[in-house]
Length: 141
Image 1 (cartoon, one colour):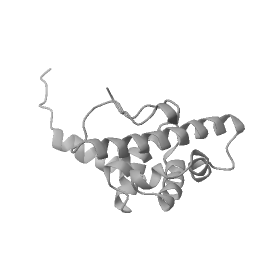
Image 2 (tube, helix red, strand yellow; image 1 turned 180 degrees about the vertical axis):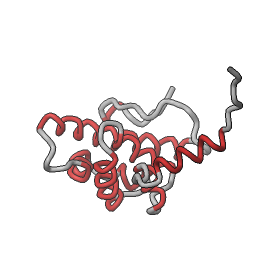
Image 3 (cartoon, rainbow, N blue to C red; image 1 turned 135 degrees about the vertical axis):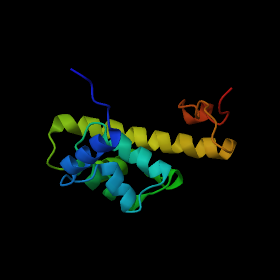
């Protein structure tokens, strides 16, 4: 029995045919809608970690209606982000996940803003201290 050479072009064409009728992945759909900055895709990716694409799309669109940059998002409270990304039909168990995710989005946005102010381009450094306000302001050591 002889082996046939692997034809990657043929394989990719067959995969393309097989998935042609399926909806686009959430990240591609959001990018096509104009939500394609690295920050927007990062936020949508964080939302998508434990949700289906249909949920990710609804939540990301609602959140991006409020804020589309790290600076804008850092001005939102965790509660406001929570309301934007929470779907009312979810169980109470899920509510905890949305609250932790909204707090994460707020913290991440603030850290990105801090890194932008301190350096350009962004350096891979620790973000601002999460200590009480009286101990903040020094940044990384």
